[in-house]
Length: 399
Image (tube, rainbow, N blue to C red):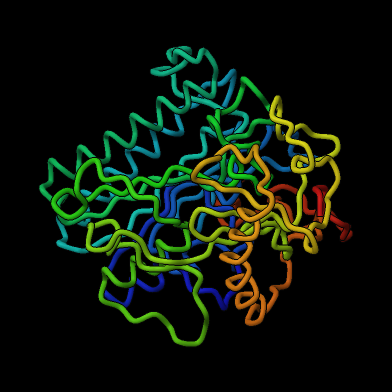
């Protein structure tokens, strides 16, 4: 994460909020990128996902931190074996403790709870191992995260602060259809993680605030996780910094039922390229791709849309009516296509006229900066030898 970016905890600090992240950070593992250097007061979890196990020779196992000090590493100190690990249970208890502490101190708080048990290789504790109807490690991990959410909501009720707390439940991407029955299911949505089809980009958006958000309310409002930043600022009565543009909007007028919908566009990017855009019911594809070697769309091939190669369709975009066709299976033509283009294209033109492309932070990798010797490794005698030579190379994923 770049130093110039302002994160939710940095913003809320101005209103006296205490903040904690529990689980997966994944915005940089070197000291200057860790959560406590970007507004969080507390951190329990990992700077990375629980990839591995590694041999600690060619690749170091990922570190687990408390605040800015390493407690140990996945697999060696925090075991994950045969789909079993107690990490989600630890994350649940960390959340409960943080909530209790701040309620006792009468301090407003922001908790970012990001268990990564659902990411491959999926895991759960013994309590949930082989308990899901799905009969898979992924199903077990979802059951345990569901249990954890229930524990947290229950604690808010017990403490009598549920009517003064906004809870948001969402995810960072759609289910990983590449691994088929061993991953999640995106229902009728097209394809999965790593694509810009709705199966890859559309996630649950559940907002819970008893007494403020009517129970059972369903809205067709387009929303993104970027809206959480703007919504949090408004709820804390804070002004947004004026030195930057925001793609997010304040969702509270819609969530509370004050208004039915706020007009806006949503962008579907892959790297610095806009692959698609949506306004209202229409989604326009300017690029298409489902990957040449990996199957991100098993059993869901759509002619001219789920293309194995990256195809530039900017001069002849594909238009989908997402209200009638959420699975993106029917390409519009004629008058209906023109109606969709006329609705979306002005938003795209305005967006591109003001967009300043960012410099990619993850195009190049270097073995020297892997997690060999994270802060705190010396405290537990678990620092690994750092390679003597830099090996800067293009990272091993599709660009």
